[in-house]
Length: 330
Length: 186
Image (cartoon, rainbow over all chains, first blue to last red; front, side, top):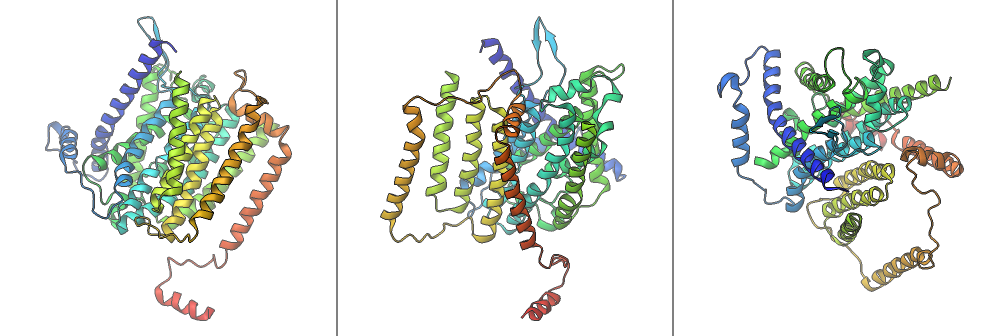
């Protein structure tokens, strides 16, 4: 293990941490603006030009707000829960190849922190473990709304994880590898090679399960304001709440990268557009898709989510895997 | 060197976590320590280059412990200490200590006589998932299929246990209807 490798890895980690923490803040601005335009409003307008400095104002508020821990809460667990959400969201990013390789001053940079050969499973598993944050937060808060949020976290986790696993199984069978770089290279031949054409059902199932995984509307059950105040986050304030927030937005970007790498051609060049810009466009489109869905769909009830995951999506995913297997065999 | 440090760090963390699981009287501490310990175990697989098994450890046990949390949420007030009733502590400690010692001896004995060899060492020619698959579908095909049948049996049993009166929804009923159906049952 030479020094250059260690230094390069540390720099990559710092860049990923910095960029995605900042993007979480910028994401809130984009989310407000997009939702506002879809609902024929203006959104944040007063702080800075077009409300751009709203991000900064929110950041100052979050950092300086009192860090409050309720008296009846289980202190250590209450304090560590937001860290779990934020940390797992960033750990998951370690195995994602974000851009094509490039060279700076004769040193080839691989824009992936750790290239393990089961990258896809690692990302999904660690992202899944991130739901321990809301669960522990809700159970440690000593608050009825919080524990309802925690109970919803448990059922949501147990429902969507099967669908995620089974929906990516079919693409894995076609590519024959669990490495995200292999997925990318498989689709190197242009738009007609994208896996989304071969596996449209798997793509839709993966996106639906992704909404549940990142806790976005229509599966925004854990902190559904109209029903359970703010769910698991009811008792949180200041930067601890901010960490939940950063984790959620980082997970949205992780999911965007995953969906573009697995189904939408990854960081291969798209016609005349270089690969790095192509993948960014895909990721931001998926991010926009998240907001679009939030603006156009209502929440579902927890029992509807379970019904959807277990009785509709899971059988569809299994049938998709079986058909893929039969087609590949003959 | 790095491997050794990582091994001892995670060995210490795992043992500490499982100690908390056993010793703590608070169900929330016990369950969280269990989840953390299970995830720390995956580090050993990563250290041994068995990435696939390490990831599977994380995925399987994070889901399994989540189900334990659901039970804990339903049966206990997880923010309070559980009052345990163990009248004869000496017997419990003696028996569990002896069983632990016996397990350590069983596991240690082949290492002492230096006969431990990897039957299927990690090879870098084929990937991790492929290696597991090859072993699973050749030498261990029968245990694999038996495990599948056991899981099928458990799944059918679970469906039968849960499916009584599944056609009516409890959430959509109003209270009076629930009361009425309770009386009808009696």
